[in-house]
Every structure is written in structure tokens, then in C-alpha cells.
Image 1: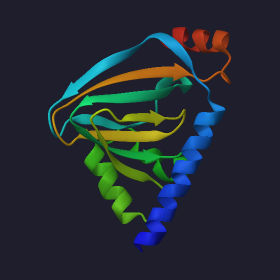
Image 2: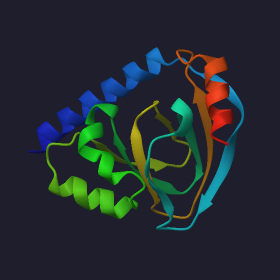
Image 3: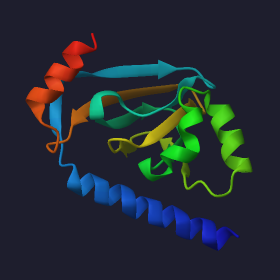
Image 4: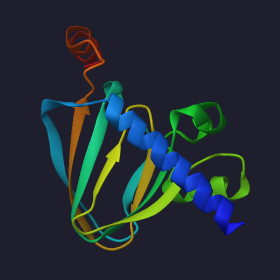
Length: 151
């Protein structure tokens, strides 16, 4: 039912906005990059590393996103690092997983909170700028130690 689907989308948007309000972010120096890709390229399904969130600004093109809240972790753990199309196929056959499926257009900024899973495919050739941030709820000294230990 299209109305129920729209209602679920709005509930997820409210959940994402709440996560944003609770994760007033602090910039991580040198943790940003430019992304370019032709149609059909993109990322595998993942969550941002080291408890970071990310802002992605699309400078040119179109990107299709699948975003899933951390509350769905048990249902989607097996999808980690899977290609976008595999995740999409799984979600279309698994009606009980809550997710958002949307297209980002030129000049749109997408915010992905800490712990939210996501995958992206370029609908058209795309250029974007992405920047990871560390929420203030994370102890910065402990975060630096943890990241350094993984290198």
C-alpha cells in the first residue's frame, strides 16, 4: 500500500532527524574527499567506520541511496559489503525491513548518522564531496586510540 509505505518513510526521516539532533557533529580533520563515478558505479552496502557520520554533497549527477537504520542490524548484517543491486533485490523480497530508497540530485546534501547502513549507486555520472564527522558523544581521546590501533 503506497500510503503505508509513505508513512514508513516519514517515520524513518523523523528517526534520522532525531539522530542528527543528538549527534551535533565535530569535524574530523582531513577526513573528506571528492568522489567521481560513471553510471552504475557506487559503493557496497556499509556503515561509516570508527563511529563516524557522513555528509555527502552532490556537485553533479544523480545518486540512488538505500539507507537502513541501526535498529534493523540483525535483519541486514549479512548484507554488509554486498553490491547495491544485491541489497535492493533482498529488500524487495523482505517486506519487514524498514529502509529508505531515494535519489540525490545536484546540490542535495545527504546526512547519514552514525551506525546507519547505506549503499549508493550512480544513476548518472556523478561528482560528490563527502566528509566524515565524529559525534560529540564519542570520547575523542578513546576514538583516536581506537583508530590508530586499527592502522
